[in-house]
Image 1 (cartoon, rainbow, N blue to C red):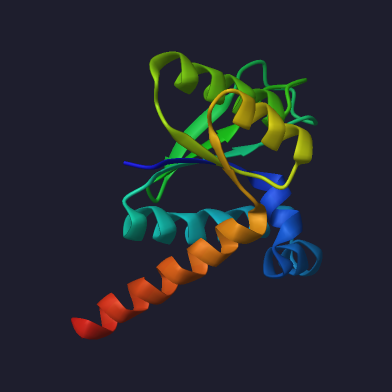
Image 2 (cartoon, rainbow, N blue to C red):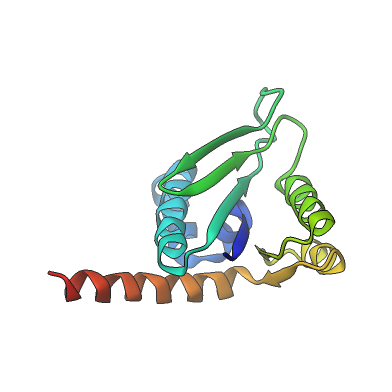
Amino acid sequence: MERVIVDGYNVIHAWPQLKRLMGEASLEAARDKLIDRLAVFGMVEGADVTVVFDAHHSTARSNSEQDVEGVHVLFTRKGHSADHAIERIAYAAAQVGDVLTVATSDRFQRDLVRGMGGAVISALELERRVVEAESEMGRRVQKYS
């Protein structure tokens, strides 16, 4: 099973539809739409998907984690960035030999994850894969309708 870690805000700012939604509606609406789309991707691809969001302005003393539509959603605790959380996940995966793919367009993050043996795809490559998964889901629904 492919394990995909998504740098949430990096992707929101890279995908035109989500960036527009953030401006027209809210950051929360953009996050929700990203999670919805990642849920379809995870279901079609059989991938274990985690999306990580910064919570710099939060006063929470611990990470907040929940599963939404099959997507593991992680909000970092006060003072910790999504990058830091992704680095910890990648390091832990490398220690046990798990293979994971990180979706981010952050150059430093990409280099760090690759250095730990993880695979990296850009935010735009993730969008391409999500669009393919959404098309496949549409075909499956149409087939059984």
